[in-house]
Image (tube, rainbow, N blue to C red; front, side, top):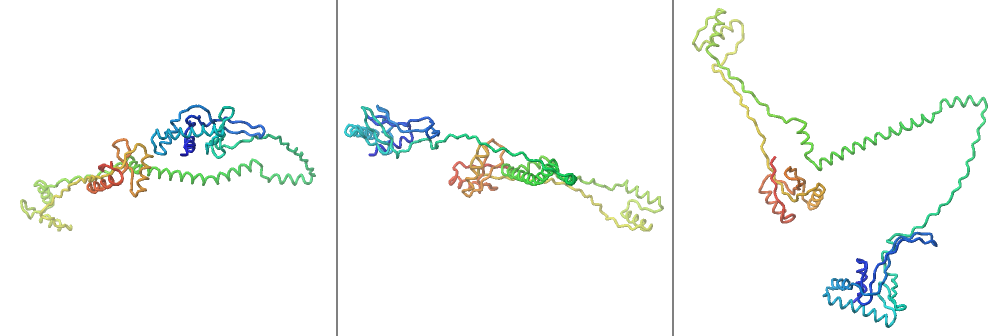
Length: 374
């Protein structure tokens, strides 16, 4: 049995491992150092060391028992035999091979452990040495003083006339700033439009009914117009008597208490040159009734697959369900503080119950139905 390999595996997890009857192998930490010869800083490192004496050998036995599926007494036996072999090699040859960790030897009645080059610890923690920077003084050559150009009187007037049309430094800066500002405006406008678009998409994703609720708050709800029934008009004896008296004053002869009274009135008006349409014998009284139509209440049945505390968890769950081909979405339910995720929406209760059984069998055994009235 390769007990040394088990010790190597344990050192990857633990700081030290004890060998029965021999001593303890442990990882020793060293602080960062400065090497003057190489003018370099070396970072902290770890190296494998050894200390003689009895240690807690039960860790090695438990590891062997777990890996080889042995009883703990059997694992202790193999660990102790490994320690006896090392002691025998030290007495016989003065050195014992503990590959791949290294070699253990005796010198002046003391143990000396030499790590193997093939065994890699956390030396320098993967950091390379850093060399100290050398600061050197840089001498820059002196700049020669420019000599003034001698201009004649004839050329002076010409140069002065040119300077009048030259752009001054302040004017050049203003022109350059104005050009940069004009170039920057389209970019700023595009960024603002992109921010507004992304904000609108984000609001629609996280709160689909935001604009509907906003419209309801800003615009008053339309109320059905009420139609007021027309008042009934009744023809009484007094009104007929009034009409007869008016005709009598005009010199017409009116027969009272007769059904032909209306024909007499029509004939009299036609003699005066009026075009008169004959009035039906029966006066219809039309009444209008208003029927207020109330919108029908609709009920949906949502199959709830999960009730989560945060929007982030709800979005992750929706993504998992959509990866399985399920059109999951967040249900707007004001009852309770948890965010409910629907795996299916139905207007028929029996269809919802059928789908609920399928989801309970394939996805979530705790799926339940939420009834929402709109």
